[in-house]
Length: 203
Image 1: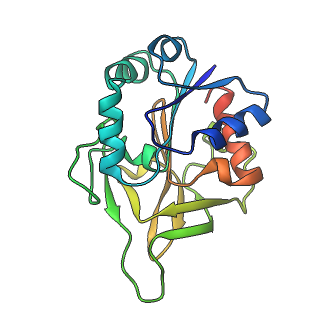
Image 2: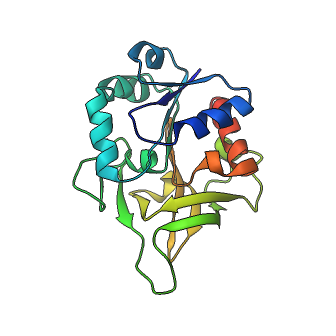
Image 3: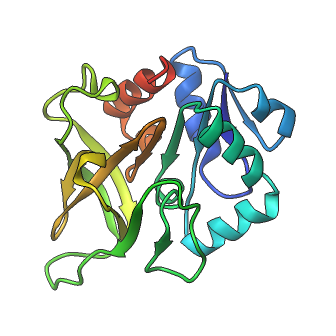
């Protein structure tokens, strides 16, 4: 069972609907017992970094998530701001992140020919072609992005996918059992469906 963490922020229903369409058992939850027996965890996030971190801290779930993800090593998928929260900090705000992945969050460049936020479909390129999460993913894969900030991991080896919007940036990162995607797989049709299918299989 996949636990989709409910801390009153994020497009939870869309994520759950995509998993259900795949025939994967999932539950939107903030219940400690339910999260404690989950096989995998999804950490969504929408809006501002500080608001998301404050919401997650207020939920009281961080110690449990740390136990499950950092110590028990169950797979975690962070989506959009949920992925950014895995890093140390964000240029968007002053709240510290979870610090589970060695990365910072930076603002996309202000260029006259590009609108901020970056909103819409964008092609991605593989940085780790053999990773199981990317199995069967088409070479022309595109995902739906809505963001003004991007992930910058300390190590390029942690990058799975890159995209370009004024600069090349990490569209997906992975460290051990933790995956973060800057895009919204639940809004990315067949490409997002394939990625979530691979995650549900135990990547």
